[in-house]
Length: 94
Image 1 (spheres, rainbow, N blue to C red):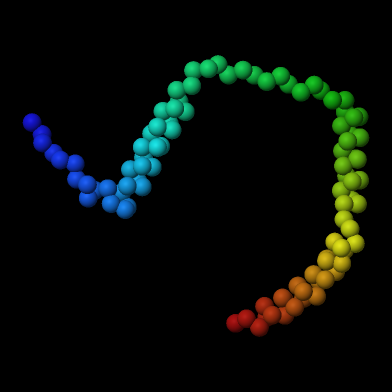
Image 2: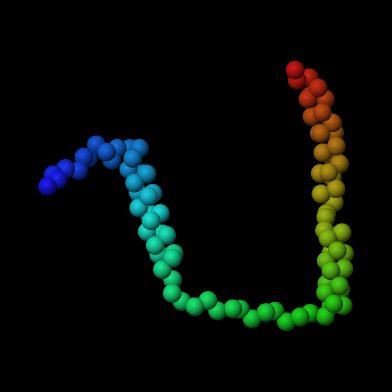
């Protein structure tokens, strides 16, 4: 007959999180694998006409070309001397 008492020192600061993680991992894998419901397929999206898709494509291209403000332009112009200074400073590094 085995008479082994549970050692409380085993569950110190390091081992307790590991034990909890192992228990939670096992419980998660058991519940994830126990699904018995049948998977139903979703209905496919109706086919779009190629001309409609092309019109949407060109509309989005046109919208993206004008998607900036004067503040964006000023910011980009300000970045030119900023990055020039960064290049000069990088040459000073050993």
